[in-house]
Image (cartoon, rainbow, N blue to C red; front, side, top):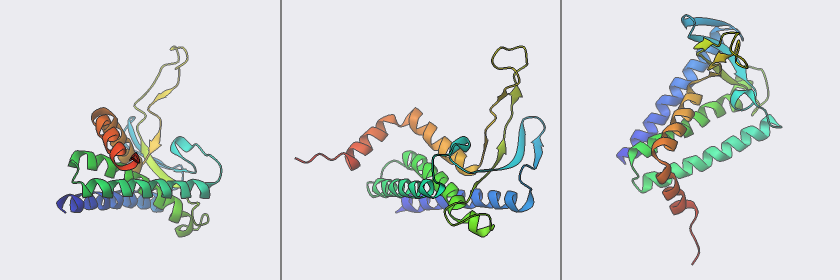
Length: 189
């Protein structure tokens, strides 16, 4: 029960932070507007992502949003199974981070188009704002000249997903295999 409350509070807190930052940016900045938090390496740059990660798009936005909802439902079910088994908290936190990030971006896709009068239900754009152009490779470096190192623009939800996935890959590969085998690969016998 304590883990359930902790994970629920973590998800709620991160969703509140994600949505608060997005709404503040969307309602106080113009698309493409930016300001430096720390000159030359961290800026808030308001962009909207119409597709998936790094602006990729695969077919219909409505289908993409519905697919995200289905996958998020699967991850929520997985969290519930882990909580029922009283699985280790560190692993639960990683899965909760991934779930929270997905839901944070789904909220944008599902509701922002309607709320801000820009598009139909399920067709909103994801608000991104964090930009860390740490440095630009000089012109004299072949193939890299004028390339910005770490140029993606992302949000709190994206950070949750990225952190959750990296920590899982680095520290919990065995747990992923064990839990998926236990919950989803039950052999009939």
